[in-house]
Length: 328
Image (cartoon, rainbow, N blue to C red):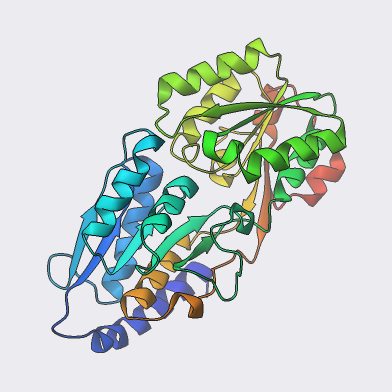
């Protein structure tokens, strides 16, 4: 049986028991913040709510969902966090936005928060197996040292790269990710050019970011998959091709579509369902400390040879041999 079919069968067998376990007269309240509207987010929400329905949560019947759109600067995050907490949800679900998650946790220490965490080094949670405080969720990497792994893979693919742009949200550039990128660059003798964008960045800001890379003579690109990059992942890939910047990203599907040459990331096809399972446990009263962070079991290296060739990259045989997916 294929893995996807097996997962579907397992989900189906749990649905009836989940419905029986739900409290018949209780209405649950879930806060989503931010409720983004883009292709990636729409896919996540569709799978997330599909799983919640399988677990017996029906919006408009036993589930109230408060959706908060965040289209303002980070200086308003504290205000938004207060608004979310004042509504007294049972659980707060936050996608991959470390700054917003930290602000919400500053406002409440009691309402459980289920979020996506780029790395335990973000500081949101320090104990993976028994989270302290009120935050648990989905962990996306094996540690901040993945910055070094990305740079090493990029250098193998582009040995001549000496000035590597690092595209990131400003909060994470000024925090653990930026510090880690600068340190691995220093150790490797590579100049890391920080190109941070604000949380409210849109197409105009990303196009300006690539102009900045060109002005600073960047000859390769590392783009992390944190907010807001994951919202504009397709645009980033498009601009990297336009500016002929060899790049590495967190999104294997972009490599499969020919939009990016390299990706190294967690193999997480079912992460929206896992996230919904965590929310289910929290809604039913399981303590945060009793819900370990969900961790990826596997990381995959994807290479698109056609896209790499278009960028003038000659992928060495050793790197090809270590790849999990090679698209001709």
